[in-house]
Amino acid sequence: MRTGCEMALADAQENIAAIFALAGSRPTRVFVDMRGVRSQTREARQYFAGHEAAKVTIAVALLMGSPVSRVLANFFLRVGTPLIPTGVFSDETAGIAWLLDPSHDG
Image 1: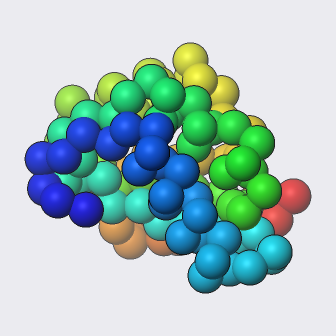
Image 2: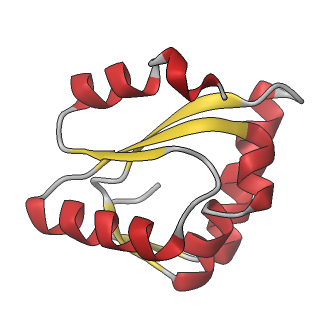
Image 3: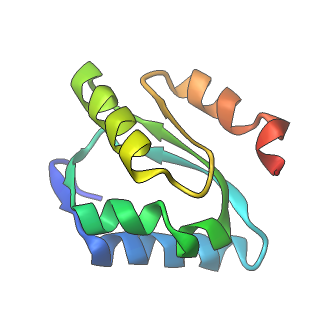
């Protein structure tokens, strides 16, 4: 993904399709580096929080680049209520540790 890009619904669908292609029918944990993303459309956020994403993911850790983006991400997570556990982090190591926590196995 290009630095400074806006993620639209088609991008979200492509990302979920790529996860499915890599993981197959077995849901997996996903670490997403969002530091280069300038914005995300409402439709993309809803898709990532919905049933299609829940079919292929166990949990998602989002790595954010700035305190402002982290606050905004947490706000959208509270409003959007994703179907899968989703955490927001500014530290890669903390995000990976959270993502690997067995409590996310359902």
